[in-house]
Image (cartoon, rainbow, N blue to C red; front, side, top):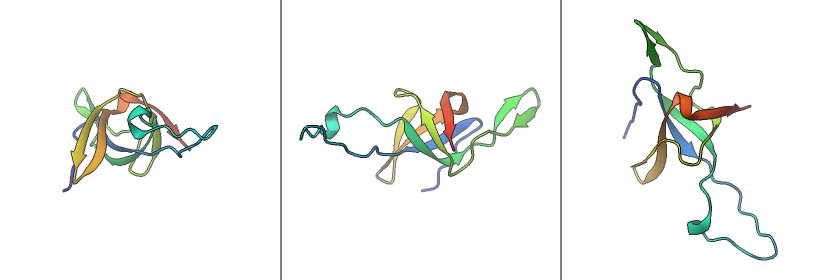
Length: 94
């Protein structure tokens, strides 16, 4: 299924953090925090300011940081994605 976000929204896929074991303790998936790092999958056309459409600063393939509770989680073809407004993206990772 092809999903195209509208206006200033961005479709993200959270990147899983590497599992680390300290002292032989493995934390189960249910107790782990959501990763803050994500990859941009699709972007909208841009935000509307007056009569102009301003393009977004992020593009497909960028790696970004988002807040723990940002956006709306959606499942598309059994894959979990996150839809956020561009303003909810905290930083781009270079």
